[in-house]
Length: 299
Image 1 (tube, one colour):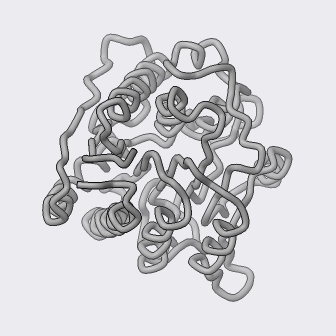
Image 2 (cartoon, one colour):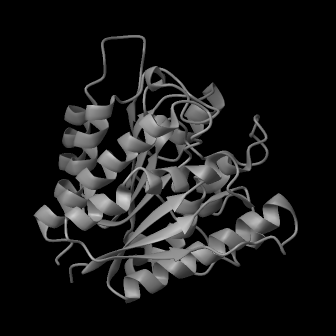
Image 3 (spheres, one colour):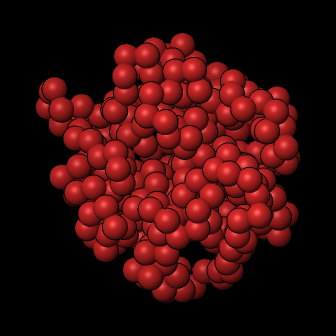
């Protein structure tokens, strides 16, 4: 059954702190015209805001409470036949989204991840001290196992088993790169060591080689090339240009079956915030048009 509306799940948090660093990204995307673009497409839209979590203990406690609430919000959105569009500070929100979709899609869920970073660290290999770098190891059941059991829809861990496709991945240590290979995850690598990667052509080829439906789609805006400035604290060269990102985002609904879209990890105060927010709005709009064109969203 096609979705009949879009629900924006608004989570403006950076590791549990509201409106801080990447927690400001969702605000800037909204103020740069996202909802007006959806209105122009005549798409019914409502908004669910993740409430403050200040009464939970520490960065870890607050972060897991946000994940619980995102999972429940996704479950409720799907039950109401509304496509979940998650505007989030932290990347780990996509682990919560996967849990929220699990009741519908069980272990058939695929992943299309636009990201410069793998988010696959476990605590024993993490070097940067950034909790958000562990979202996918949590989802695989490799780390924070007890707390992950408290996230609604989590059932012991997801086995990606080649149904996971990164696009634009590039900022990895040798240890991180080997973990990706060992997990059997598919990758369109970003690079500065050879001629420019044709991300659109490569994505089209990979999506045609096997099914990535139903799919959780994840857009970390640091997938953009660092020539656009600092999207967050971890920019890197060799990424997607604006037009490539927009074309890729329009392509995904036409070649996979998206069940959600998460847009995250954007600190508007790190660089040219309005420019990056404008790119995000354009990319999201292209994605939504793709949903309309394929009938996955019917209004």
